[in-house]
Every structure is written in structure tokens, then in C-alpha cells.
Length: 181
Picture 1 (tube, rainbow, N blue to C red):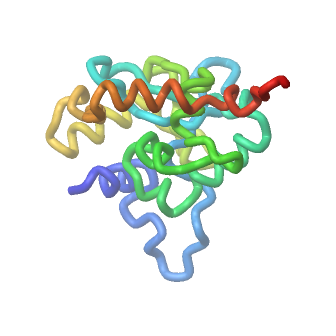
Picture 2 (picture 1 turned 120 degrees about the vertical axis):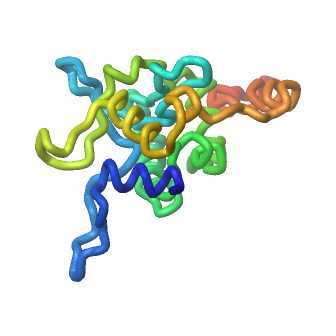
């Protein structure tokens, strides 16, 4: 069973969107909140981190400027974003309205933060029944796939030299610099 199908079954229910006359869902994958008292909204970029299966990478949406927030949420809610098991690779193929790569800008400008998976709640409904701790969701996905949680992390197969060169040349702050004459 593909990861997307496992995720949909666990988060959205086994028949999500397949009922006759269904209303399109208003709750999306990759969206959650911090489990602390702040309940700050987050976008879950990676549900696990390589070699750190109990950590995830998220973006706190309230810290983004409106233009970036709106474009990020549009990407999350898009058909392509919802089709992905992990949002990060999809964001790596998307651009913000100013032309910067979404994943690269979020990383380079320090919007992506690491949190323990137990401190993030995935929200997929309006009530407490529509919430699951990310660590529990990861456990269920790993169990359904017959793998360890540590095997859920996406492995980086990008050559180091190319990744380093790309990361140093694509910063939102670079676009603000002007040459003085």
C-alpha cells in the first residue's frame, strides 16, 4: 500500500472523499498545531528526520509574511500537495510569487524548525476526534507499511556539492540587495 493511501486512511478515514454527494474536505494533510498551550498552527514539512525518527520539521505559519503564507497554504491545499506523503519534496518543486524556491527559502531564512513529533498534533477535523499526535500517526503509518519509524524519513540523495551551491545562491534576502553606483 502506498504511503499516500496509508496516510489518507489513517488521517482522513478509509472512505475519505468517496461518498456519493460528498462535500470536498476542508481539512488537509500536512497541517497541524503545536501540542503546547499556544496551539500555534504549523505546516508539517517532514514527519520524520533522517537518523532522528522522533523529530519532525515544521513551519510556523504565523511567522511568514502574508505573500509567503498564502502561497505556502495554496501549495499545501493543492492537489499535488495533498497527493504527497511528505510535503517537503513537493515544496522543493514549487516557487513563491517572487520566484524563490519554496523549500530553499523556508530553509535558508530559518522558517523551518525541528520539533519532537510528540509535540505536534496533526489536525484533520474540527473536534478532538479530528486530531492525532504526530508520533502516533508515524507509528501507525510505519506499522501499516511494515517498517520501522526510522525508515519513514526521506533519504537525501542530492550530491553534496550541488546542494551546497544551490543553498548558498537562493536566499530571499539576496533579492533585497541592490548594487550601489
